[in-house]
Length: 376
Ligand SMILES: *Cc1c(COP(=O)(O)O)cnc(C)c1O
Image (cartoon, rainbow, N blue to C red; front, side, top):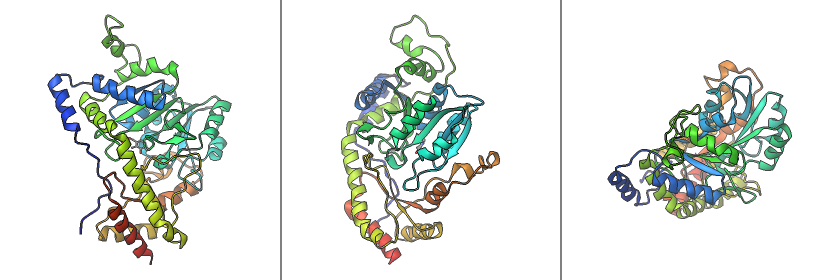
């Protein structure tokens, strides 16, 4: 029986050629021609003020935190149902994290729960577009405007997805994408900072290059480069950028295949949902699909865990997802606030099925059959 992994990075075949091109150029460090090509592509495709490739999505989030200027005494609201990097980035700046619950219908941040947490100390809201499904951005934009807050999008799942036709990552002042191996396109480890407030772009470029104006120096705009601001080495090497460019060149094909898998799951699993075995993902009208991940919502954690074991015994790797950050070993020491019923339910009940561009329709059929057999 052929094993079906949870994820398999899609290798286009041109990555090697571009990597050799970089090796032969003798210029391996960051901010070279592949970096600029990738950045220009994202900036024009999503209508951004500017963008910078980073060595991870985590780095892009850390840049968001630095650029937002938050520090001790400032509060940042975000979902508890997210990856640790969303929270770490702001805690590293000394800000206070205020976690909020997700919506009941979807693991995205609830705007009503968010508004209830806003105080005079709130500086920023970080939304996470879970599974590439847009958060209710009109509601968050209205909150940000009313309370003069910075709105940041953790768009790590959300490449090529949109909200009412607007690309995700282009709506908040700042956004972070990820090109980790498990994301739709990858260069191993990598990320992108998207800047939508033009007044932040010059500073972003300085923070990116260790707090120096080296990027301006490389363009010949200044005679020497100097230390101007706080910063770090956030940029990715040309080797990663070369691989990323190979992926960008076939992004339409990758997206078409992933969305086809997603829709196949939805169609084949519908009878099981109609029989009340599990729930299928809810996608609001305003959100487009990007085929990032497909999940089922089981009835409880015990059932979900038995289904994982059942699928594994049929050679199928299905996995759970985020453990709530508010009750994590690290954060629970600092937390004695309310519990988050929706977050806890999604964390206990979500099961992610294998999803990658090369997953065949036959394999989807085999996976769905195993799921339905478990319930029947
Ligand atoms: C993947 C991911 C990140 C971090 O990206 P890396 O590139 O792995 O550093 C951050 N937030 C979310 C929601 C993610 O899924």
